[in-house]
Length: 216
Ligand code: SAH
Image 1 (spheres, rainbow, N blue to C red):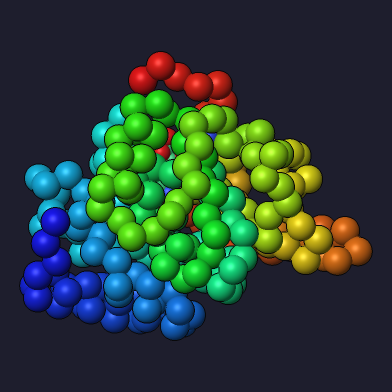
Image 2: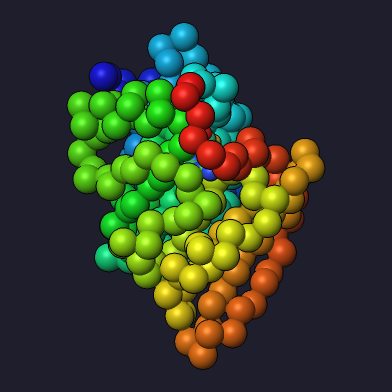
């Protein structure tokens, strides 16, 4: 898939608009400047790829708005080599941003159709080694735990205890919490002594996190 000067130019404008919305982590902005978001969208949406908006990716799901991706990634304070668990692979755009920043990415998607489509896309078109799993993100990945960072990209009605257990002491979890049509962006810090700190970072809208695996 092509990444033309036009795409690159639109991407620069998007990065500038993120800066104006107080995204200041240069590593996040660099990663998002590098990744051609348009290849993650269906071709009919190509022209919208560099607007700061969410878009449908099939199976009733969306690729998160660039600002939301940037905001969540900034809250995570990603450094090279950190082991990151993402819940809600979707298009794998967010996972790619994490991988571009040097994280070792593990990501879970519960929708089989989307999982298969995204896995094939990643293998064909992306330079990153993403560890993708089909399953219920509420359970995390006990076999690969603990994680330095955990990122939930769907609205969680509550904080899943297994995820909290799989977070390393000194680790950070970012989770949009709330069952209604708006969520509180929560940053949870597990201190080295195990103490848990909650920080609130504003209101966002996410598609709901669902439980058991559908056949869709
Ligand atoms: N991070 C994605 C966008 C996420 S949209 C991207 O960059 O494109 C939220 C995703 O979470 C959807 O794909 C949805 O199917 C998935 N999801 C919902 N509930 C889930 C669960 N319990 N476990 C894993 N994934 C879930």
